[in-house]
Image (cartoon, rainbow, N blue to C red; front, side):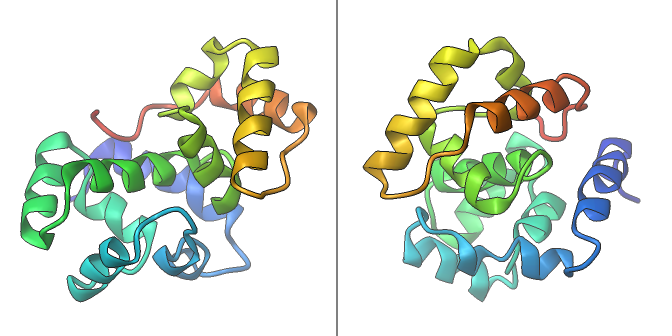
Amino acid sequence: MLPFRFVRAASFIRPRLAKLRVEDALSLRRLKFVEPNVKEAFGRAGIHSLWQLVEHGLTARERRLLAKKLGVKEGDVLKLARIADMCRLCDLELAELLVETGVNTPLELPFRPLSELCAMVSEAALRLSLEPPSCSKLRELRMRARSLPPLFDY
């Protein structure tokens, strides 16, 4: 039986990705800023998408055991969990950019000043050779994040 918050989170993620299978849309292969050896370790364990990671690592204990089993650092598993959490708000590329910027969870987005958030994301996007999102897009994400329930135990 899945925890209630997991089932509840599924109602946020799955409708956004109705045209694509969740596993394809959130494939670990599409991640740009995760080390290849980490992706390979997850692949060997049969975890090929962020959705599957959500199923295996909702709590800190589960992520710690998963990192030990895969032979990767706990920080790498946590980074992927944060990206999966951000994917409830936006597409995979923007979620990865936000995590690279230092926004750890969608729940902290509403508490960051919009001007600072825009500057941080734009700077990180330029540093990583990506197109920065508009401030209006970030404002929309902040508004949607206010009503988002927690998914992971950090």
